[in-house]
Length: 222
Ligand SMILES: Cc1cc2nc3c(=O)[nH]c(=O)nc-3n(C[C@H](O)[C@H](O)[C@H](O)COP(=O)(O)OP(=O)(O)OC[C@H]3O[C@@H](n4cnc5c(N)ncnc54)[C@H](O)[C@@H]3O)c2cc1C
Image (cartoon, rainbow, N blue to C red):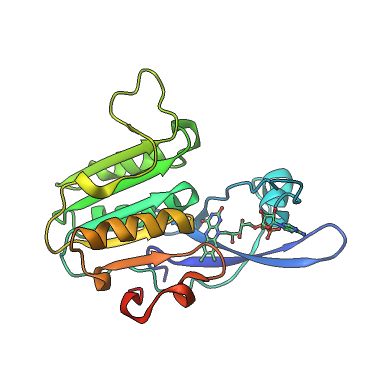
């Protein structure tokens, strides 16, 4: 069974015989017979090489190819309690949002859900229309977007990096954040300053978790 928010390890045989595993969030659980992942192509910056597995999947994996995939794992999973949710994501972190929204729409449509997503542009914002479409099945669903560059005709999205300081939040909000570390740091400190207890802020790091080690004991992540 896949719990929304979990990931699988995908094993890829790269040219040259190197076998490499990478983790990818199961980005949709809407079909009982299909397992969906969403892979962002990682480009090397400042002379670094492009990401090996993401590039391979983009360039060589085709519809119908079998992929070697592990059982789902991970504890970035929403508890079944009815507390309102803030799902704050940036970039690829959106892959954790869709399965959670799908799950709430299916099992607790009366539960309040706020999604907040930041990206470079609307064109970079993966899974956007699907999240909004599924969100319409939730009674109390609000979506916010921040883009570094907002399209001229887009009057709903906010300009710049995510700023949660004026987003209306219920007292008992449960927060799930996923995205680049600087984004999660910023989101977390804004929420802590607003009085959201640290124990109510969960996060998922798409890479080695260097963050937990850097945090003081008082700020131990949830
Ligand atoms: C729990 C979890 C869930 C995840 N979910 C998703 C998801 O849903 N979707 C998604 O797209 N990703 C997800 N990821 C990230 C994913 O696992 C991979 O890390 C990502 O796809 C990059 O892998 P890669 O093989 O393409 O890049 P790699 O080859 O591992 O390279 C990674 C980075 O290191 C740099 N680099 C590599 N070699 C060098 C070098 N010699 N010198 C300098 N720099 C170098 C590259 O330029 C690149 O920026 C998740 C990760 C975790 C841990």
